Amino acid sequence: MNQHPYYLYIERTQPAKNMARFYALSIEPSLFGKTSLVRRWGRIGTTGREKIHLFEDEAAAVMLFLEVARQKRQRGYRPRPTTSSRVPAAYRLS
Image (cartoon, rainbow, N blue to C red; front, side):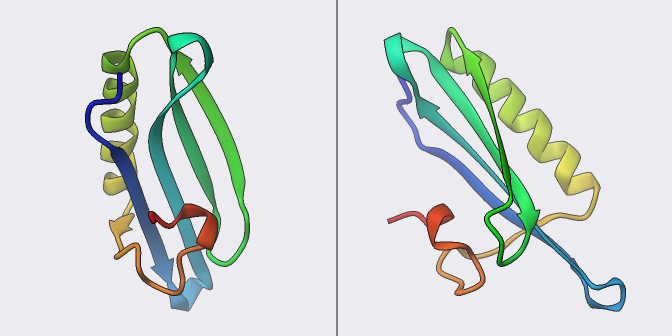
């Protein structure tokens, strides 16, 4: 399970509209051999909100991961380096 790490942190900013949003996706193991897709979003600098989807297998989680990433890219979200000081510490990779 989870042979490859799946993690994505993206941001959408428009200073003229005072918009500063983040969106984070990760695939993580859950209890009893299931796989979870964790979605986190909110204003940059806040904890934001979280939603967890549970799947029987990793392939289904990856499909949703890719679909959500595609949708967010179409809406203007772009990747940022995870070492940026603007990324909340809870969402940084070690």
